[in-house]
Image (spheres, chains in turn yellow, orange):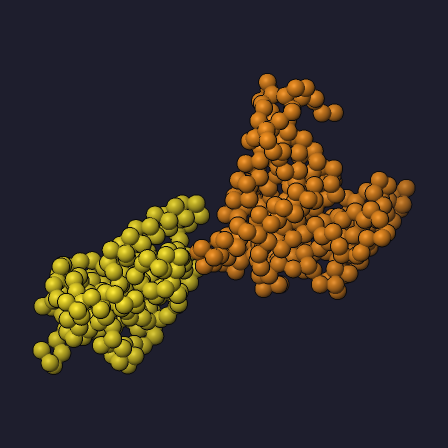
Length: 217
Length: 255
């Protein structure tokens, strides 16, 4: 009981999740696990979707309090849809990330939510942005987040290469998620992956038993 | 010359029986009393030229600017009541700045033009306020979207243009602009033509001295809107003056 209270009381603690996004040659892969937990002891959902579509070719992954993250992404989705109609053009990925950042920064006292935004636009092609808990916006070629991410920093640093092919990047992302889910008790379930390129969007779901196994299994 | 809208022209919230809003038309008259401003779009940028009438020898050179910077990549040339124009320039600056703060990138010119036009239009709806007595030309350059030029008038309409003119000599200026093949020109060539047009439409008899204000934004400035450098401006003015003299000479020959 005490441990649970401590965890949820401290600001900046990420609750059970592994999320990641990586740019490859011609697109971007964004993915997450599918476990929602309460207090680190009870799995409230084994198949929750943490990869939300905020526009045709822009997705974001939620981390932190799922309730806060869902509320923020709903607001961002509305905002972006209105913006894209006014501009008569699909929104840029940086616009989507800026909208999320504004919501996180201006409401930082009440919210506990962070995001990874990834997508494709005509101006800059594939991009990945991180919006952290307090509302900092940062662009990176590859990024990981959530409690499970701590177990895969080494793997990501060693194995990510710029300009990978689509298949290489998908394999990299699946491996990373599998390794994180294998060690983090609050990450698990299936691996949800979304591949975004100029031509469109493809969802890939890897069920738990089909995830790559590493020697400790 | 113009019809008098007796009784129907007292406020912007009244239509006349033939469907006109006289206050807005009077506002456009105010623009026609001001000296000329032109903006032309070429294949790699935008050039603005303003005929700035110098009413007193005591004015400091370069003061009383008619061309404003709205954002790094956006410029605005105005004609009409200058005080109205300056406050609209502030409005445009805030729009552009808020957009960048909210969406993380430079505001596209069409969107800025729509937003400022909506603001201008709002002042044509109520009797408590008067319409803005100025028109302005907005221009920008972006390496993906290229050069863009929009003009907003006191009624709150905005149109995109390849070339446009506002102010007292706008008809004469439009005729000169139509002669140009601007789609094939570069900014450097266009700057000389813009200076020439301003010199042509300037009325030596009615208005005495004038200062030519020139600015540009395009590939030549790396997408930043700025006043044309001194040497380019001097070259453009020399070209303009020489062209005028040639025309005078050829008139004499014909006689």
